[in-house]
Length: 215
Image 1 (tube, rainbow, N blue to C red):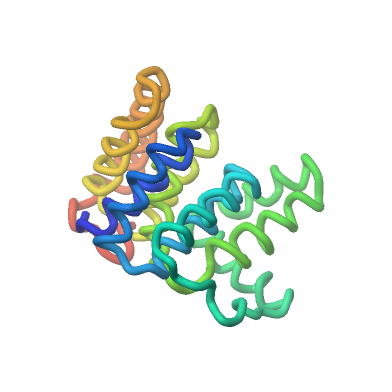
Image 2 (image 1 turned 45 degrees about the horizontal axis):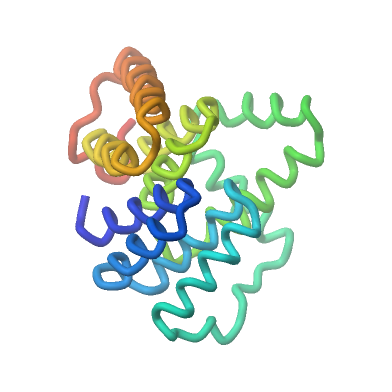
């Protein structure tokens, strides 16, 4: 994992901690070693997991820290475009579990299933500006700090599906472990152990330089 990616992952972990001081420190570090557009994508996508208040606060800190203006215009994408992009991205993240995921969420509520694909994966996680595997590593670090084992499991697996190497996933968890409570860190590593063992049983051990597609 490069220095810039590591800083983005650390920022994501800090966001989930709820500590303004940790966010400020991680943000300052990311500002030095990562591209501004990548930092802003990490901050934007945090709203999917932490809500608008946390994302708004983080972006306000970023503007104050850097003095950078907001982009001149939003990324415009017709709703139909978001849906198609969301289907592609979600299918890549979930692999052979994609259809099952959609069916399971639809049983909870059909609108939530539609929002997940169109809003979550199409409008947000499918945006340009940050490579999908880096997005997933950031999501892993963020979820490690939350009590969300099912979602963490899905995105640990998704990071591999997106092309992250196992050693990068483990580095993301290590970065998160420096920030999140010990019990949460231990739980996250336990989830990863399950993901990796099941992955290896089905696909074989992925190489540590997995590249674009580890399957």
